[in-house]
Image 1 (cartoon, rainbow, N blue to C red):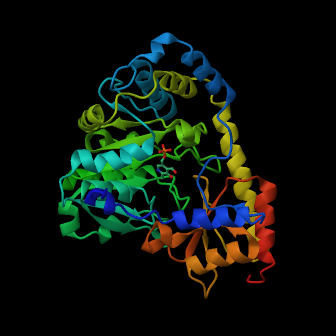
Image 2: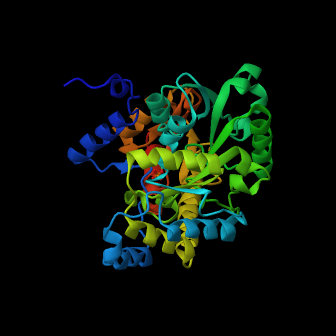
Length: 387
Ligand SMILES: Cc1ncc(COP(=O)(O)O)c(C=O)c1O
């Protein structure tokens, strides 16, 4: 059997070889500290699991459920946006239920673009954006995220041609991989650009809950006019440690929501209603679990950054997400430095070039092991005598 060209053309998973290398080292009995992945290490809070258990026992949830998601869950997402961001969302027309944010990110080019159309993607950026580019057979240009611009794209440096041609523009703050956050002023500038050039904005808010130093990351939808030009994708994966549950949602522009729902009518039936019921409870119940999670990540961040500074590594603290974006020392490429850390220190990190050309010169470290292991990772790096 031969695979279709569509499958043959899918981008290779840059990090697959890293995952294999780490697995091999662990199999050899090496004590690898794995800071390379983005899988939340904490369990889903108990009250959410209990809600799923109860919902799973309800026979009503064993039947086919509304294709476009249950009203209860969509209403919960609207109430959540009102409570957290003071944004009004119509649960019937402005919410699409997703099998995780990734599926939405891949579906959007399929729903809103024709072959050969142009989209604009951040570089460095979440590699899975390219899956949608490939499946929809569209073109993309990158917007460099540079340190001197606080890792925000500089719209002035887009050409007139790019702005006229672009159908979709992806943003992601708090940002994977740089840990940068956006401001409302930047989102305002984005809405203006989108309005002037008729570009659809997709804000990937996967790390929306994770902001440090007491700063709550803004939602794109908090800016006037955002709903006219775009959509925000939220996931339960990070805020509530529900990555394995596969549940998220898109909120905002009703036309985009309609497009997602139309495609999903053909691709899926619906997400298990018990999962939607438990997700609604996660969004609406007491949010102490979220506050505690952010504190946990912030504590880890502080430990990592303090240790790096102690050994003479000049790094900056991320403002959000659960990643730190660390510059590689002079004389190494991202890949060389990552290989060295794995081979000589048993510390796995993600080389920055895997996130795009402008990720070169950095590594991404996940704050997904406890403080002691983070400290030990830096101590092992210290022993290499580089800093
Ligand atoms: C930037 C970004 N967007 C989206 C996702 C996907 O999240 P989900 O689990 O909802 O598919 C991730 C997951 O790592 C991510 O880092």
